[in-house]
Amino acid sequence: MSVKPKIESLLFISAKPMSIKQLAELIKKDKKEIENAGEELVEEYKNNKKGIQIIKNGSKLQMVSSSENAKLIQEFIKDETTGELSRPSLEALTIIAYRSPISKIDLDRIRGVNCSLILRNLLLRGLIEAKNDSKKQETYYTVTFDFIRFLGINDVRELPDYEKLSKDDTLDRMLSGGQSSAEQKNK
Image (cartoon, rainbow, N blue to C red; front, side, top):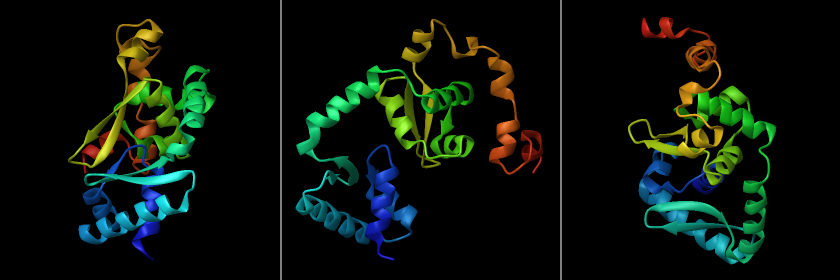
């Protein structure tokens, strides 16, 4: 399989730009091959005049909506960021509040679905923030001060049953394949 479809898939699910280096490591191909394929994709998308574009900024690529649809997208985002949160968004936000910092992969596994759009929406609303862990090459999500202030609390630990729910190892067991935190530490 060509590397271009792999790059497209990764860019599609990523909520942020991805570096050539990161794509090369994930796809397990040479950086030069990824860079060349990325440049080809940028041109192909530009020439196709579709609603989606791939843009390059330095050594990073990102899939974005086309500039021709900017007004439409702004209206949608405005509606999306001012309305009530959907039940899936509330579930994800609750998990992040009680289990943060949490990676997207773990959030996806807990909820059983891809949470990319939910995370994007929560980021746009300023309820969560993303922090990149360069050692693990993962992004971790936590609630923001705005979220805490919006709830009228001074600390996330003031959430109902925070101590009990944040320490419950049921999720840890699920994410690790059935072992408790204590069992994992003894390995």
